[in-house]
Image (cartoon, rainbow over all chains, first blue to last red; front, side):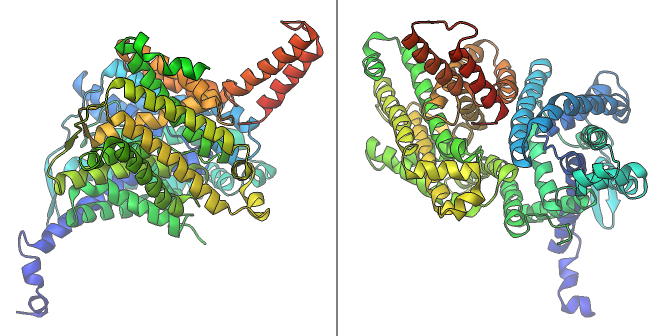
Length: 308
Length: 325
């Protein structure tokens, strides 16, 4: 019996022991957190760069999920192919929303507070319209499909392949976004707008054009995350709000405009929710989510991953 | 006088009309209570359903032990206390954060209560045994709606009302002019919440049983918000004006096309923001003033170039230039 035995670790980490279960829960939380980060990436692009809080965001997430669902169920194709349709459509709709619904409000608003109030109302309206259209056309039934659901063994724990795929997709997208923001001219312009739109326009950045593009790209990201997440969750036409709220919590935790911190904030939320749910009660996950959100708002309202 | 007519209506009306009016009064009271706090301070709250649900649960628990009027009073007190706690911890949040927080609050209370019922009480529903007739509920809600409107009108004419409007204009300035903004905000938030809880409790008398998803239905939050904004949140009588068309629309659509109500509600949001920034109430007020003046001059409708319409148009332009007068 070595040091591990004296600490009781051999008992803790025997097959099926409490330590192993906790590790599996932790790993599950990490994977879940990856998807939270993924869902929130697009929203942070929309709210951080374009300064438009899009409460109908979850509907574009659902759009991606439904596109994947119909691709596999109706046309018997690989759901990944649905991205070919859902990405451009979501991009175009979001661009149109920015150009024709948001710009008049931006021009009219005397300050950011007034703009926020208008935007919240309009995007809530859009949420209802999209959700109503989805309910009318696709009914409110719970949908889901099976894709890559085989188990994978990962450092002693077992996870589903589709969850792993979504996690890797989240990491890849976040990394790609990081590279674009960091090293391209386009990304530089976006970062400049995030920091100060007025100063950015003074140095020759076309703020309206780039904001519209960032807003549209955020919408496309929503559709992509919807596709990836739909491989392992069931969803219905009315569940979009749930994802908007989750994404918003992650964005506020990460800090508005901190695109690279989004994934990290998602991971924190996923792990806390998973481990907290396991230790307390699985029925309390929303309460735990919300308590964490409250705590961040009260202690660090600018977000966890911002420089002071 | 209108109120007397409405109070004497029940013996002459069918059960359906009574039910419709009950829903209407409930919406009027909720929208007026919402606007009392959110319309003046511009803290947009989506927690209506949370306080409404708290009232329902308070009644369901209390009516077993005490008489119905006492249980209703208890529900209002519980709503007040809950809002006091929530307000003290969250009213420092502004703008979007407050909206999101209040929206999530409903979900939080819903989840925690559901968990409590299943874990501790081993049940998901509570039964309500009362013999209160629909007519008494009608009269009670009419009284609540009227008192809310009159109370809101009264407050808008005293110091507290000025303080609320000052906070809505600019909170920093309000604080510097010596207004204890925290106290005003928390107090009015709690008063508004106690009315919401009371309305929930009165409506609960009609239900044979309740569960958490009946009590904490987010639709209430949105419908009340839209009614208030459509009517005009800056006038005490504005929200009532918005509640009437909305309730009739929902009544019409709910039976025939249930999903289309959501779409109509969504379009209402968009139309209000783009075309009716101040709601219907300021328009009605302008028309009324224009009519009074024109009648004094013996001309209605006023001619196109008259000073009256000129002033009317100038007023409209001023309204459109400012969001939420």
